[in-house]
Amino acid sequence: MLHKRKQSQDTLSSFGSLTIQPATANARQHGRNGSLSSPLPSPGLPPTATPSHAVEDGGSIKLHPEFQQEGNVLLACKDAKHQVGFTVNGNLIAAVCPTFRDLLTTFKSGPAIVWLDDSVDDIRIFLRLFGLATPVKGGMWEKSWEPTLYDYVASLRVVEKYDMVLLRDVLHNKVSTLPDEFVDNMGHSKNEVFAILHLAHVLQSRPLWENICSHMGRWRNTLDLHRLKDDEVEWLGPELHAILIAIAAMSMGSYPYADTHNIRVHYDHDGKASVVYADYQKNKCPNCKHH
Image 1 (cartoon, one colour):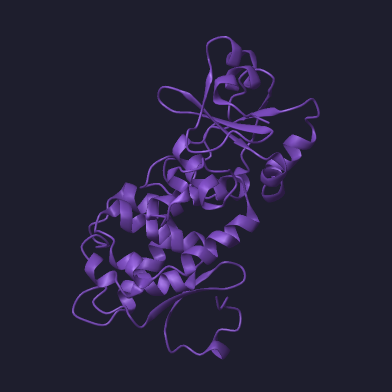
Image 2 (cartoon, helix red, strand yellow; image 1 turned 180 degrees about the vertical axis):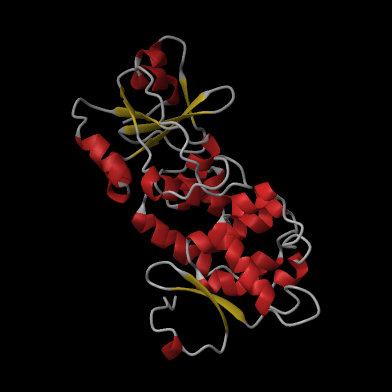
């Protein structure tokens, strides 16, 4: 356990050092890790193990001030200036992530430092969104918190990267119950629009797609298929690009996306997408996921 901040460096010196290998086999590979415009992790290089003496010899870990110092596992990341740590309960993080579970079951010699190559902000938001770390009493997390698009995207990056199936379902439920105002209040930038499209597609959320389709008319310039650059098409990926082509072709009106309110995106049990009209009968699409 970590108790008092003034004792944190002495406590940290007792933590052994581990490295974690991302579960990239199932991770989507669009974009660059760490920005709003890239909601999914790129495989990159495996995280580099840092020896435990780095904590003692000047490479000190700065514990994140928004969370309490309670736990037997320290998740350590690096930002531009510091090594930042988050103390968590090893049983909690192992229960939702096989990668962590396999790693921690082989470590029997006491508290562990697990070095991650994720951004500090991604891990901070991920732990907060899923309640996997204890917030500081009286801190900002105890107040009412409404996650932003960035918060959902950042959490999705971590969930996909480490193949956290259970938390992926939780995140699916969270985004599928977002109010219409969430999408209605969005801007027109490609960063925002591409991010929410990826959120809906990767999580295969029909309710979020329905919300998106009801607003696509005002994004017609952002999503003009004839003006997308090659790198933007590559970033979208072939599946999502094809979905946009189908939606534009099926929309009614004098221009693409003029009226998309009656269009829905369905996924079958193999994850294959179909673009259909809202009155499409369920018995004509027996393999679709209706959620």
